[in-house]
Amino acid sequence: MKITGAQAVVECLKENKVEVVFGYPGGAILPVYDSLIASGIHHVLVRNEQGAAHNASGYARVTGKVGVCIATSGPGATNLITGIATAYMDSIPIVAITGQVSLQMIGRDVFQEVDITGAIEPFCKHSYLVKDAEEIPRIMAEAFYIARSGRPGPVLIDIPKDVAQQQMHYKYPSKVELRGYKPTIAGHPLQIKKVVQAIGDCTKPMICVGGGVISANACEEVLTLAEMIQAPVVNTLMGKGAFPEKHFLYAGMVGQHGSAAANKAVSQSDLLIILGARLGDRATGNVEHFAARAKIIHIDVDPAEIGKNVSTKIPIVGDIKHTLGQLIKHQPTRMENDWANQVAQWKKNLAYPYTEEPSLNPRDILRKLSGMVDPQKTILVTDVGQHQMWAGSHYRVERPRSFISSGGLGTMGYGLPAAIGAKIGDREKEIILLTGDGSFQMSVQELAVLMQEDIPVKIVLFNNNALGMVRELQQHYCESRYYQVYLKGNPDFGKLVNAYGIPSIKVEHPEGVADGLRQLLESKTSILIELAIDVHDNVIPCSK
Image 1: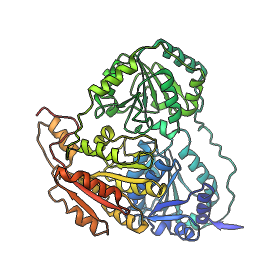
Image 2 (image 1 turned 90 degrees about the vertical axis):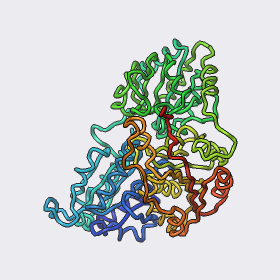
Image 3 (image 1 turned 135 degrees about the horizontal axis):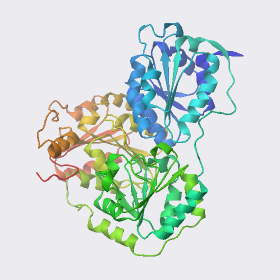
Image 4 (image 1 turned 180 degrees about the vertical axis):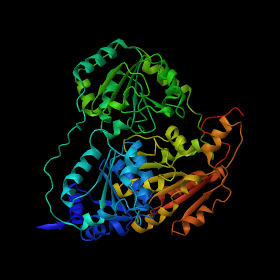
């Protein structure tokens, strides 16, 4: 029996157990949309294609599944690029399907034609331009395999309209074989033995967890190893949630915006085990001084990340979960000493002095909020800016896949659509969006999707009427020459969300914070709380 290429796309989505897709229709992708009608796959209509990619990212990060987004040719496809690049930097599995003009029209600059496979090349694991409908089952199978295997990431499939309309014989491949693409799963046994020896020789071990631990579902193995060798644990922003923050061995977030105790412990350590982290500049600061006294072990499924930013003594390429399983079987031990207690004492002595008094200080607000929610049933999604860094250090997370943020690319406007994708991915969890007045306005149109899908997302908006992080950087590095950072045209955010049928709360005085947060958490519908914070409040205190 013959079907069209577009119908084959839908059948392939079913083969991969796709239940929901996020997208926006247009002329070149119409055959696929026509085939989706009776498919049983739920389609979420976004208001901008970038939102579809961020939806898919939030969905993938919460569920561990591959997120799917769809757009038409031309501007539809180019609008996906920022969302795809965001997923690429954070290693999030996405399959993006785009429409394209007919094959014979490609290269003629016809209406809504762009070379999307060429444009997206630096920002995805792989891309396909489908030239024959018969190739669709193979390409779709490969795309999903590439997206979720090894170091996860986005894959794009560009389908010309005439190919989508072409008749073909459908047969989904029973297995995927890609020459030259075979991610390493097991760590090399000799390298594992070197790690065991290094642990036995050390006195001040530390473990640094990144987003790769969460992607590999290796959190239990990290906990076992940390307790086995009594090594304090720090995380990067993407690794938040990979280790329970109430645990005695948890030392905090590392890096420029991390905790003093975490950074001090890393600087004093003599062995640093890095797990699934690329260690970008925000995590290391001046790389020459990062863990300068430590022998560094780096375990990652992506060999390109090992030694790229930090010199590594013992590199191991392999899946984090599998490789830690190998290591744990050796039952590594080290000489007992007071190192873990020392780090715990630093954590206590150097902790930020939270107050129980009414406060509009964002740190106090986030600590209060994290104490009011059920950590097992709540997912915090952040936008990008000062609020994101405050959340990284002051909002407690106890389980993986419950802190969602744009780490690598730092994409403003990520939060709201990612929160929508997260809620659709796990409707049983409470989704809280933490955003700022700058980031919120970059994707505010996606509020319509909340109402369209009838899903509740609790929105916490920090409003300082400024691009706070840029202002902070200008204060530190431009001698307080503030330029183009004050958002004087800000709307009345309460009226703005009310226009979408969403209730709002505005808090301008410290005494209203606790009651406002209670109203937010007790609401059964989407709701916004706007908190007026001081524009002078920085993530990193400034002497001026």
